[in-house]
View 1 (cartoon, rainbow, N blue to C red):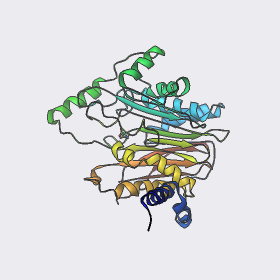
View 2: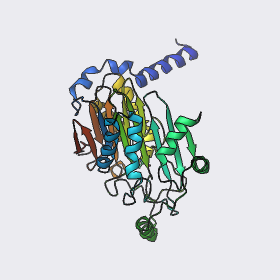
View 3: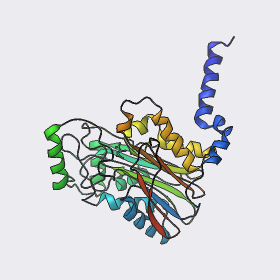
View 4: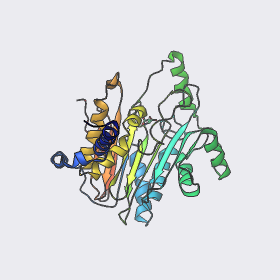
Length: 330
Ligand code: ASP
């Protein structure tokens, strides 16, 4: 009979092998039956939703000028962050239920360095604050007032992020004030971006104003390394959009990268991560959307989502195109 100690260490080894893939290695046939939808060409930029098109444009410009992937993803996602007409990222983002725009962002480079900010107010470019946290501090995540103080001390300007358009939408919402997650409102939510530069190095960025009309103080998946974004330069990267709570509880982006480490194509890995959510007994799962995009070191890409409506922008071989993702609930 196993004594308790042996039992615990055996089950720990089993769970670790499930998590990190010894089990998955036995399952390679699954990986090879689902092809990636990229050609494996580099350099490459991929990002979530339609707002990924102009963002990719900027990121690829940086790469073609010889920039690092991390510089490219920062520059790329700054485009929707600075666009007042984009109601899900940065300036012009839809506010929380108290009418305050609060932002989450994260960035990860080819060395595994990462930085993030969450519950940040008044700063148009949270991704650049996240990058400074990564580059200039011994920490990974700064939150709320502390993140704002850090940004102001580093020369960022305090601005009003609530545009008249977003304020009007919030005032309409207040009339009913029914608290429900509102994913997919305008078919352009969080921007998550992954890039491979001319040296073949990978980086990623993710930035959002989060779920519209969230409870004040709510933080989503986007600033959480491993949930909304994960990059391993030896393997690949993944990023998420949609109901952050579902991504956090399944540690989605880390899961995708670990699956790829164990032989899954980016496409098969995204499908498995979505399947985990679909099978997690979540009430009203059909009301939610989660979309993932992924790329591996070879430049193959994948994407998958819970329900129809998610698309992503892929810039490769000189073409920057919007692609519809396949989905789990048909
Ligand atoms: N993932 C984001 C969050 O939960 C929102 C979104 O992408 O729609 O904050």
